[in-house]
Amino acid sequence: MAAQEYFQSHPDQNYERPAVVSPVVSRYNSTHQSPPGGAATKPSKIYTDPSSQSDLAYKPYAYSSPIDYHPSQSTLDSPSVGGGRLHDPEQYADNIPLRPHGKPSQDDYLAHNTQYQGSQSPESQRPPKQEPQRSRYTGKKRKGWLKGPIPWVVYFASAVQIAVFIGEIIKNSTTTGSPIMIHPQFNPMIGPSTYVLINMGARFVPCMRSTPGVQDAAEPVNWPCPSTTTSDPNADSNKCDLSQLCGFGGVNEKNPNQWFRFIIPMFLHAGIVHIGFNLLLQLTMGREVEMLIGSLRFALVYFSSGIFGFVLGGNFAASAIASTGASGCLFGILALTLLDLIYSWGERKSPGRDLLFLLLDIVISFVLGLLPGLDNFSHIGGFLMGLVLGICILHSPNALRERIGLSSTYTPMGGVPTASNTEGGVGAFAKKPVGFFKGRKPLWWVWWVIRAGALLGILVAFIVLLNNFYKYRDTCSWCKYLSCLVNLDLLLCLEGTVG
Image (cartoon, rainbow, N blue to C red; front, side, top):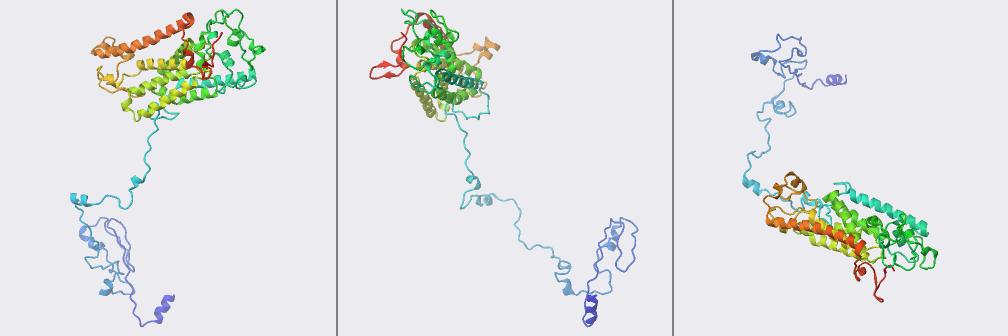
């Protein structure tokens, strides 16, 4: 209404109104709207003839309205009408200069600078990829505790050793009133009394065979009881017989024979320092070696080394030493690792560092072997057994492979053997017994004779040592100094002999 009043109050002004634009009618629609003021018509057919398409074309000024609209030429040229110049053939042309989309030449590519200027590239700013941690013993990539094969032997042995040590502490506490030995002297290994260890199965020669100065003594020998806390020989706690000290149902006083003391000591330990060091070595180096060579071969080396070490110590160590611990077993694993290091020296990333760690472990173990309750002969025996079994179960070293007809290099522990580097094991021999020996070079025969001879030699040595322990009892006068502390003033071994 306000608009009408405005138009009526200004009749002298000529206002022009644009014409109403008719909607675009598609030729595919069956209906259309009629122009304003006109009647609706129905097309005769849906699909029209192309010649009549001009009737349906878009005609913005085809219909008139109550207010006539006659645009001028300047209005048509105005950009506000119809979105541009309607009659300009250049109305849709772009004024943006475009580069021709031809194939770039090699000169253009080489001239283009692809280097980052002023700052480093995003890739160079990323933190460097860390190399996986490698074992200081085997040189292999260290796996997580829950990855790879499960080291059943290491876990079983460690669990049993921990349980037995807890039993030692409990028994020492109930028999002496203290969890560790503090009277009549302090145990430097921070553990139970020596006599408690003997009662629980430590390797103690008088409990295993007849001993000079014991069975042939003019008067019965009094032994310290497991509960003793004094060094007074007249105390009642120091007047036990051999059966009370040895335990396990007693022994034959004339001919004791607790042979199982070559095996049980592998699970006993003299104190926290002793078991702590052994478990540290066992759960690191031992675990890695078992994962590389398999549980069967690891168990063979582990237990064979431990038993052979206690047999060697029983022959040459002082007869009064009560020996315990899995150090002999671990020395066998150390020998196996050392042999593998020598065989694969050229393939190691830092063989000198690996050798240094091995030597450090060996030196520490030998120093601990001088303390009461430990035996360096067990270390030596375990190391010898580990070397021999390592020669038998490991692949041939690189120095011999080419000479014996093997073209590939040495496969370290845990390496994946291929058809070219396998030497033929029990499986190959079982499949083709005759073909296994065909085409072998003379040096191959020599090397296998050496390996078989080493295995046979260690078995013979084991039998000879057992025979000497029970029958001949030959020993050496200076051997005891390898397993005991020496008083430099008196030049006496602090671990004496029985008798």
